[in-house]
Length: 327
Image (tube, rainbow, N blue to C red; front, side, top):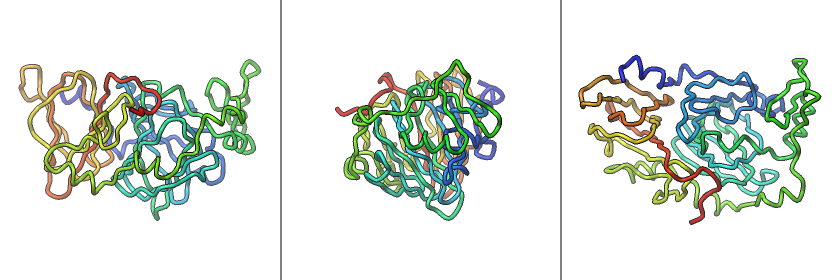
């Protein structure tokens, strides 16, 4: 691929296009200042206003949430994996039917894999605008978001109605639920029994890894963060590796499916070659940038400047996207 061919597959942090009405809690006080970004794949946004940067199927979705201090994302669940790493800021993740079963605070670079079937939310508790990057399992991300009942009920009071099709209607804009469509049903008490209240030990011990630990583990070879043999053991339909300056290599390699590069620290020079191994192009990625490398394209990524350097690498596997693996 020429540099011109590759450019549409690179999303720069400064060019991210936010949606401020992506979800049903967009008008609910405390959640009404958040911004949602859909970087790769269709994501789970409920708004027609959501911009999708790269629509090419990867076997997973990449998104992001940007929020000012004390802004929170309401309690919800997914049918496939939801993995976050903190790009900037300080974030509190909480879970349970009412968000009181447990919580954990994540700092920049930390990663969390939240089990499927668990209501979860998150809040920026830092002093500045913060950003978390998200990986959602499956090309269709499990068919959307499952909201805790109180989130849907609160949203109606503030002018937003979610249809059973997953489309959001804003009564403040004069929109109304069509007569042919029913509102999204609220989970019954019997249904809620399928959403367990997990303890902090269950969530944090199995699903949270700290940046400084991954930096140490990835000094000589990339750290397998999420995968069957990862430090977070799960098979969500994708694998996540953590690469540092010490484990980066300028040796070209390929994948049989698209892969994604997401710098956390430092600037990374990505080089790619043609089918005969000849150099074709190169680019430099900064923290917050996202690059999709096509399948069968030989490439390498190495830090381009001195100083701390780290990068998350994501590639799909043959494992089906679905419930959290318990093997």
